[in-house]
Image 1 (cartoon, rainbow, N blue to C red):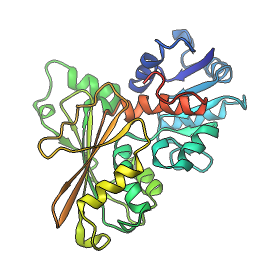
Image 2: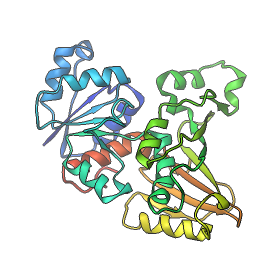
Image 3: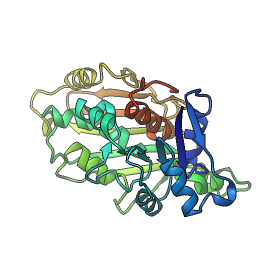
Length: 306
């Protein structure tokens, strides 16, 4: 029996991980009594008695939790941003490369990717790696997300009655051009220029669409949308969860809710190419990816429970 502890189980991601693990017969979830939920000694005992601990905590608390780990066999999967660019931590996006998958498989410290970052990196990483798009390309990324991405506070705000009329429209944020997902986007893709990132939180519960436009005269000469689609198709052809799709009409941000799938689209014309990724911000963007990483780290079928 695999023992799992979810530190921060009461948060949005923690609850989703717990929900996905409960039906599994190979998993025993360690649950602390309410009065010991924030007790350091109780948490330390739970972490070190587990085979896998998920950290669903704010960054500072996640860093503190790592200091409590004394059992060398305990695998830590951190869903916060605290360790995504830190040396010694595997970046938990197995589909990116054989090397990424191997680091997850043999690692004891795994940083779960951010939701927006997952969409951007899935689109950009293969193209930079293939030399189609230069590392200093002036990337712009537009994205929309369901309000669950803002956590409990945002969920309560959007689901309260009455509520502010402004919540009925898409709301642009991070207008100062700083966002917690940018460092991992830059590092993982090997970029030399930080993208302009425009995220919107919208009036639907979960789901996400991430778009990246490209100008053909700024990328490798002769590159067409067919070239880009071929590179992405070949890059992800053996994956279970990332798929290349065709759609020239409307792309829904909530079409993959409840799954661990991600769909990539390549559209455009001879001058401009539009890359789009859709995913569930609580699935492949959070809890689903975390469980996929756990399965890989334990040597199990990565699709188990997903």
